[in-house]
Image 1 (cartoon, one colour):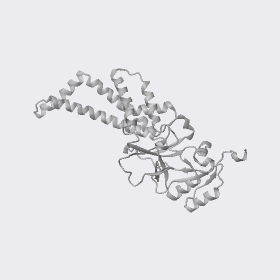
Image 2 (tube, rainbow, N blue to C red; image 1 turned 180 degrees about the horizontal axis):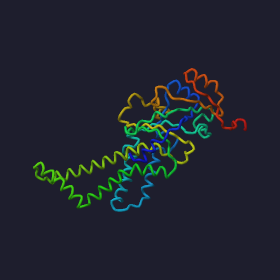
Image 3 (tube, rainbow, N blue to C red; image 1 turned 60 degrees about the horizontal axis):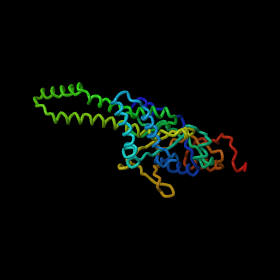
Image 4 (tube, rainbow, N blue to C red; image 1 turned 30 degrees about the horizontal axis):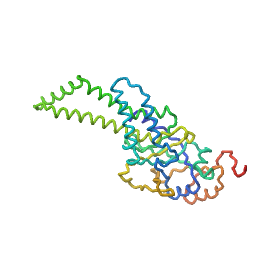
Length: 327
């Protein structure tokens, strides 16, 4: 993994992240011990996931190649983006990405109005500092902040593409170099000599082809893996106030989840989601913030008591007047 990408997915997790929701959803969370993670193509952001493709494509198109090999690598990178997102490993036909959303902001008006029943709901504080898997395991699972600034998104996506493009450019230069070909042939003849074998040109050419395919496949696999993780965290700047932290759970549709079932909601039961435990035996809820228009504090405290969730209940500090009072 690129150092830059590794650093990003190791961004220190805030002491608390907040999940804005309705009081009825709070009861569902407490009773089930789960939080819903919705498939990324069904969120309120119409550019979700494909935004990363658009940013990366625009960035690559602006690159001025140093030589002919890098020009070919640039075109190969553009082709990789089209294939990956439209019919490859990042396409919705092949991969589902489920996301559970939180915010690093505890008491944000826009969040109350958008996600917490127009200010009548709650914001649930979670301590999720222990859910991040070790990077060396290579899991596509990620818990990290969303990225909104254009230059930050470009740097991360460029890092994801760089390994494949550099590998492609180097191989292109080598296969056009008589010196590289001569060195490969010399090494091959030396092995033949050691083992007393006759030189077979067809076998030599096939071995070179396989060597090139393996290098390109390895580079493409790493780039696809990095793009998969980054795509669910790249957001349009219009959403920057949400200060979102996101748990993303990529899933190959042809392989069933282990121990968890994909469910469906919505008027037509077409929105896929997971009811997820956040990898905890008991949800690590640490505080409940009550919305500025919520009048159900007593009920909220009763729910917490019923489900043995003994955490502070605090009222929102936003000095906003109820719209009904000023009409």
